[in-house]
Image (tube, rainbow, N blue to C red; front, side, top):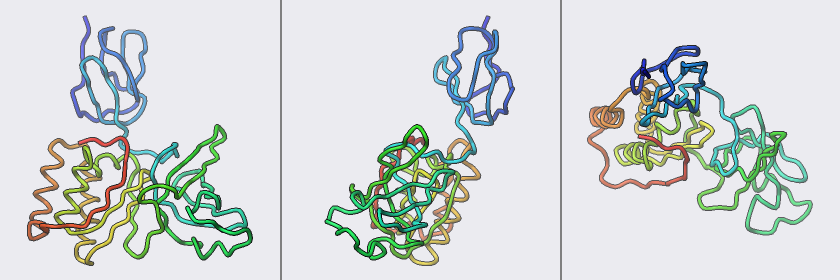
Length: 246
């Protein structure tokens, strides 16, 4: 007879037995050893009918094709720009993918992007050798001017974004700020200085409480206590982020 030894949203560690019997199916972050399903990493339990998987609580970002990220230009060459992706792998933005306008051979590329510039960019390709290519051709992809940059755990990005962008949209509205969240764990925000501080504190709160139930309501209540209840109108900039969850 099969037996489930954990419950939804439990935090488990590697080697912990999650279930016994053949009725349950191990997926991401779990494996089967005989009659038992074991955890292969630290994570948050998610049970979907008979399927058991773990949502990682920490980890490094690994570039994936079509990810929207915020990168930092770290080098300029005759062929393009080398960009830090907040991962073990830097990326290349070639001249042909940097702009929809024609860039002449030998042009001063620092007029477009210079060392230290932050850009919202899209990963166009990742090879089997982890060579990463970027593109600036797409809606919302651009150089970021002013604002504040913070870094979060890439594993917490789905919680900060929320289901269908619900969490980040609420933060934008209640603080009247612009926010872009890169899937690589780099966040850009812009607003009044006091509002920026509130947003930073809110994001840190989401990070530390991401494993708790009722997170969206808790954050809404928190924002209500540190703001005047939120601005009625807010200029928002929606960026596509995969892997959203409530």
